[in-house]
Length: 167
Image (cartoon, rainbow, N blue to C red; front, side, top):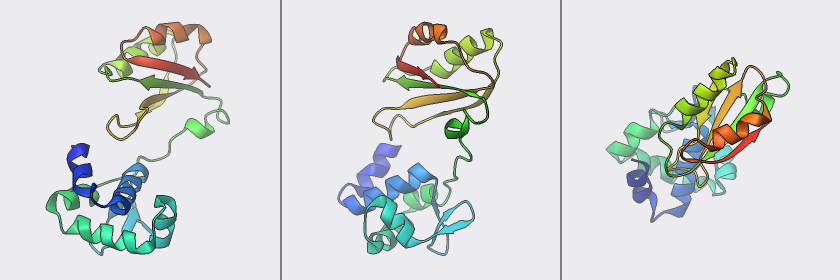
C-alpha cells in the first residue's frame, strides 16, 4: 500500500518529505485544508521546519493530497499513535525491549510476548515501526518490570529477529 502512495509523490521530493513526516507524526489533512494532530492544528511553518521544506511545499502537498481520492482517504483518516512510553519508561520503573526485525517478521510479536509471559511479566505497551516506512524496523515492548539479560539469547532465536536491546 505505502509503495503505491510513495509512487504518487516520487516526482515531487518536497511533497514526499511532507507526506512522510505526516505519516511519521500521525498528522492528517482536515476538510478545511489545514493539517492536524488529532484536533490540534499544526502550523505550516512548524511542519515545513521538521520536513525540511519551505511553507509553499506544505500547501502544494495538501492540494495534491486533496486532488487525489486515494490520498484524501488516507491522509484525512490518519490518527496519532498516542503516548509512547519508551522515553519515559526508566522514570516509571518500566522495562524496555527493542527488537530489530528483518524481512521475515511474521509471528515475532507473538513469540516475544510468549517469552515475556513465561517470566511472569506483564506487557504495558507494544508498538512496531512500519517495515515499509523504516529502513530498520523495530518492535518496542514496554514491560511492567525489567527483563533479565539472560533472555536476549532466547529473543535472538525468534525467526526474523536481527538484534535485541534491553533498557
